[in-house]
Image (cartoon, rainbow, N blue to C red):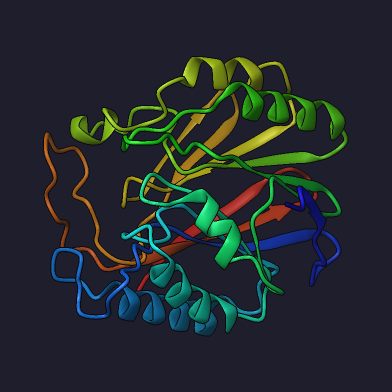
Length: 260
């Protein structure tokens, strides 16, 4: 598996990214997620992003790519993502099967790797997959890679992407399924001053806070939305969406959320 790539930018002084997350594609087109056709919803989100945010330098797909971790689901997703001309970078979520992702999704425009290098930024894609649970974990190898990359690229601003939230989002049922070792994660982050943002999926809702001058963000799912601040799962009536990010040479992150 290739572990890094140099990203071609449309603009010298900033990088434009779109985050799609929690696409939850099924093996069968007849299955839905709480009444939502996840493939149709994803196609609508992509069409909306094309109309509003194109051209973009890259697409980040931050986990739960499929709902059924079987080859057919990834093959269906590969067809849709393969039609996007921009580079697409994926990482696994709790519904995924990482080995199947590597086998089926990687092609000319879809990549699974840990480091995306731009003129002024380093974008790190972390793997928090943990077998037989919806929670996430960063193992020793992944934390070591994070530490090594942050030390290696001190001359660049850094955006870190993962599936599971490293902080509580004030939804008790979801907070039980977050990253299970956030202290170890932030012990690495806090050693460095050039981390500017942390971006995740999993929670199917928009969230933003700042921790020690680092912007922390989650984003809507491309399908079903979860109502914030609840004790249990309640489907939100908000529409599917995605996040756009502009990473400036200064280290500033300009970001907004779009809904279809």
